[in-house]
Image (cartoon, rainbow, N blue to C red; front, side, top):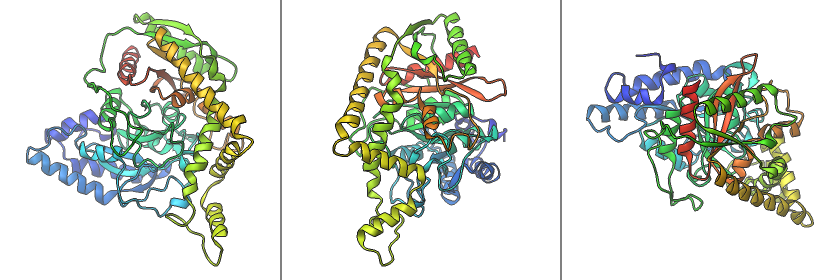
Length: 478
């Protein structure tokens, strides 16, 4: 068998379909790597060994019976973030309060992977309830960056990023609320896509901020990224926020000679942006310009309010979504001889970590009588202002180019005692999340010490194809 860790998902599909390697062989290799190399990174919370091998055996039988046509992820090992429900396997969200919760159903995105022939090998570690930018708030410990274990892998989808960067799987699912896939992708040298809000079903994704949460993929190859998005996207009757739209062949059409008009947001290049990151973004823009694309300076003045707006809206929705964890219906229960209210308080005190408690308190505060109009309503007005600015900008340009994160990956522990500094890690990713437009982090360049740097592209609503095309072109330009 070829070197598994170097194989793309597209190559695995070809090998398995032609009988050159079996799905069982591929799966065993992935599981062995998950144990040997995933454990030092603390990247997995649960490995799904038995079911993964069962899925692989079934795939090999379909190949032998000549019934494997139409399975775009035939035999491809995939990992999923531990806030996506997977039937009868723990879905912990990185939290003690859900440590023993086994859902009775699959998330829609997960079921679509399985129907496409993928093999689910494990559930990946994450910031607790996706609240974090460094994968350091998990009840199950921190995730380490496979490129340098002293560095964060990013957050909140750090576990999914780590297993793809390490070569344990070629593709993985994370989730995005304000940058939780794009930022780890930048830190780990990967492609990370935040799809248009509603283009991928949220059914079975444990809610954090329902108005921005999106199931989002990682890959080491842009064709793999397009492939997995093509599998998971589409309307779902189980999710009222999912949308119907005209589909295209995202893989076949990813290669294109179309020339784009690309906007550079002048407000992005200010104090706080690492000069090495700025240099890489400008180099990418210059290469695209030499390739025939047009680079123009544009303005998005509402962007300066992005972090403040996001950290009002997201905690407000989180405080509502997490109210269900009370020790009565599912998850942890700290009962004893306590009265009902005491049991609620004791369960949440024991079950939630510090960052989750901080955001619940903040969200409850901004929704309280007397503060709702002052904070939450204003934040929603800023969101609408930002959405309208994007509408106007996309009348002038086809895409936006920007940094993905203000710095390369930082040291573990560097920002854990400074929440504001941590929140600012999402300054360039939040606008796309809050307005619902798609955005993609593309690996391009490095800092002087070798840390990878991502360049972000943002497109109009439902134009993921242009993101794949520009990423493919930039990869070709090198």
